[in-house]
Image (cartoon, rainbow, N blue to C red; front, side):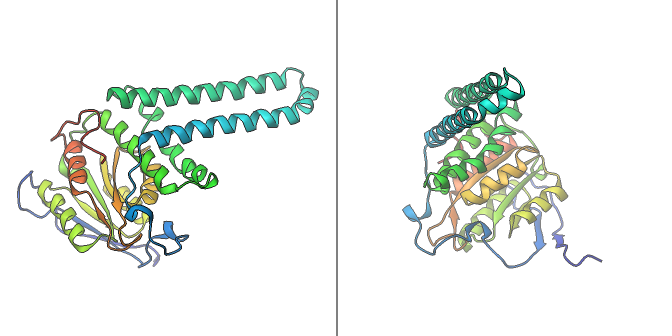
Length: 295
């Protein structure tokens, strides 16, 4: 018997409709007590702006464009250095390699322009794999790395990228799924009143709720429940990681935390944002240009 596997338990399930007082399914995994591994590098100092990050989407576009241009310039510089050796292998090879670098850079810029057009119009006509279900989740952790290299805040960059992701997901259109096909994910670090508020939203709409001690337990619960969509509350670091893992497989919306007492302790969130995301996913509300989500 494998004793490393967490125990998964659940209360009896009910299927209430909006506005009922029945208790929804509360999912549980008995886990270890470690919290906040994404914050292992935190120095204990107060976070800027009270731990509330509110960045404009332009931060995402600026950093992504800069990363594309720097990468293309580095590729061109490397090609210039090794070009004579490549030419010894095959004379046209350096030229074709240069064309390849230029083509990738142009395609990346065109992709950014397409993302901007979707945000401007509020209509997501891009294939999911080209937007919030593929390229964007793949890119988000890499942007965090670029931010750290450039001396920028990974949390601010993550916040901007999550805004873009949420707006793309909302512009895709309402899922219109049933409550038991949706899963709400919460962090264990929520303050008591914030946890009660989140549980009240879960109860109001009859949506199963899971308090995830760590990211891997959230992934295990998703694998066990097979929801058709997920609405998650977490800090920017955990949400970026979670969107990277889950968004290619199912729709995800994220609500960021307010870290007034620092990470992983007495955190809070915008209840109106979480409720709007639940309603949108259930098809109970229609967003206009992503206005129903994001702060």
